[in-house]
Image (cartoon, rainbow, N blue to C red; front, side, top):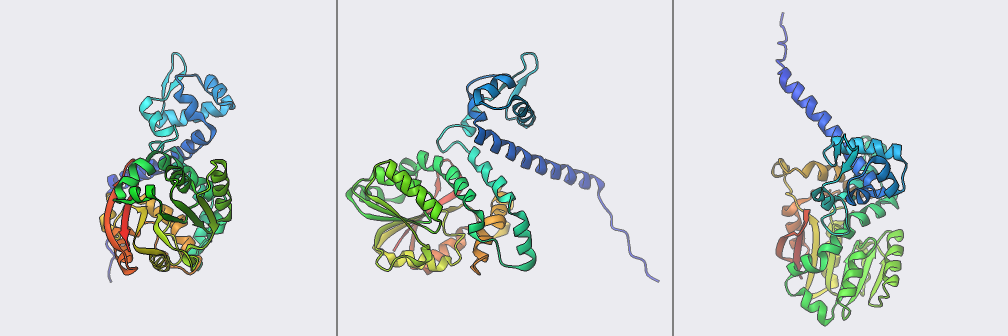
Length: 358
């Protein structure tokens, strides 16, 4: 007869891990509360100064009972403080800097992606069992709004004065007048800013999402711009006559069905010596190098719930959000590019900037 030894369990470690899990679940709820505060204007109202729940609700034009419960969540999360004597809540200026305003330091819009992707968990879980993925169309138009909200402030705050200076002589060439494309342009805000800043250059944005292109055209028209156009186009199949001096890709390579084909197409569309600027995820291609990166769980999670699955839905490569610098460099080289530099991006802990030359 044989006996199976009982496993020795460290109960303290079990308790510690359970506590950590509840911390993770709590953080998820806090993220949703940040989402609500952002989309209802509560953070902007709170930034105006200390207020009771009734005063804050009045400022934001909201229902006091909901505002009071929301305040309970964000106060116990350490986002606002509470004075029980005056029943007033205060949003510290340092916290307001991260949750309000239109610049690159406002990271409140990032919370939107968690709630949006959560609505597709059932479909992604089905893909775990059956293979394939969730098509990009399933995420729209909500995903268009989310990505516009996340990127707009960063572009406003950093594109012209923070990102472009990292691209060598490209700003001087833009001032002189060149042909520029943005692949996967979304709502086109980046190109609108570039077209306003560099009137001698001409710009075209390509995106597969018709709703995003419609919004891009409307914004350019409202700005009175005549040097920028937008086209509905699968960027894996750029027009045969496309010829550019520079091409931008803002977080648009890693979720492509055929990223290698996209990069080859960009290479072929550039004139010799042309510049390819790719803003993409700051991470390693190797899991062991991402352990300890506090943003890594967020990035892998976004990949599972969106970036990887939209590619696999088309039988694509499924690179995923965390394709990483090592693989990115190799793929750029395989497409015929020289990687000139890889730079950190101001006020952006998520991305790096690849500057490549044909």
